[in-house]
Image (cartoon, rainbow, N blue to C red; front, side):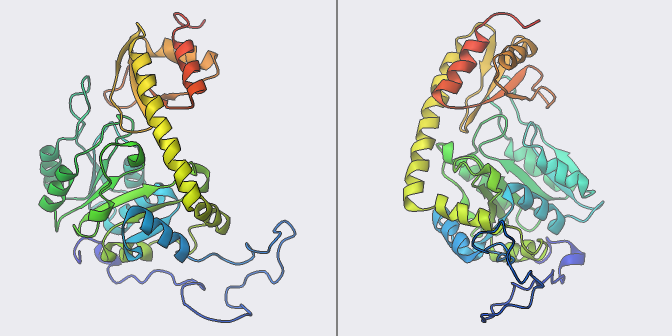
Length: 357
């Protein structure tokens, strides 16, 4: 791990904020905060800067994911973790990241904004089931000297999940040369287990998790990276001082209470049932070419005329994701699994006829 971070950042201490040190006192005058709370802040809680890594939330997520807190870094959703990984491990103009399109676009966006080369290894069998080719990924990563290999499991927008043994074998093969980063934003909806417990055991494996999807906290922007302590230390030194607003931390802690987690598990189970019903009913429509199997909370659907399908949905007030600009998806829309009522409206709209003037 000593050779993977950017050479110019290996001795970089990062910024130590006023909340970085464990100090005791009842009059806090070390952070230039306002002396009196804003009138809109009823309990005065946001007058102070929040903890850089709130211990209670870190412990709650570590318990949820089956890891120790020292292997977990909190941040503003998975997006911040992706950006931190690129900044910490890739020198602008000199290193590369590998992605497997069609896939979540932020891996390539963060790399390109950072001046880092993006290497693509497309998913295979576009008209059957999209699959990662581990051998092709390994070969391309070695050839390009990639520092980061981004995998998405379940994939977005394809919906397929990766086998854990295949990911671990890839990580072992690239040990010492690259980090293998597995984005598990949708893993709660999948049949395959999370690799979180293996992150850090396999020193170059990083797992990204989020509260945005299954836990219904997209607006709170809370996610984390799970990795070995050396990787976590490198990322933390590159992170802004106060990544998580205190109100969002409080909301997350309430959402991780035992009662809330029981409800979340029930909602995930209901989404899985609706996913299968929606898949089955969509496949019966005459202008649907294929509904790809999904382990996430969405379906990738191919149409004879995707433009007409999109118009019918919009005319019915249903907004879906147009993914036709992505590689191999010129006839496809991505449809999130909603409530039973939402899904019924999707089916009625798509069965309504040909096109909208």
